[in-house]
Image (cartoon, rainbow, N blue to C red; front, side, top):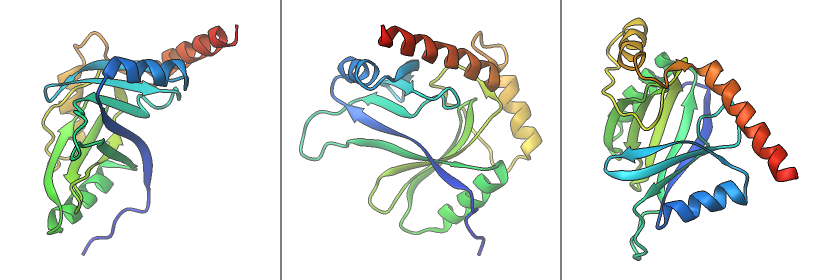
Length: 188
């Protein structure tokens, strides 16, 4: 039986909110986060926030919480892995687990992901970063049976004509400047 890769690190979390704009305002105004992207994913408005120029998002806010007793709060818990090989290995382990539900793969352009439900139905994302940035949300099919080179080529072909496409390092520099400006404005 394959072992889990040794490099699995916490990355970000997402949660469902009742009032997306109010929560976005709170996290940005009070906690200093900056909006990196927004859109609609699986029919729900979504906002991505970060305080780190190397992280596209540290907090993901997803509209859809209703306030009922059985309301879902956690949208997902996300863990970064070191390589596509690590992602494949974990995907193989997860598919063998009887207590795991709803397993699927996704190409976000910025990352390649495996999603699954843990034994208590919490959604978990395992992902590896791509070398590119493209506006989010983006949800494309991912075939982990393809080689690394094929996955990279398919992703690049799918996103390179999008106006927001660029190397991740370029996006990180731009976002670092945006964070610096926000910090300087807040200090005044």
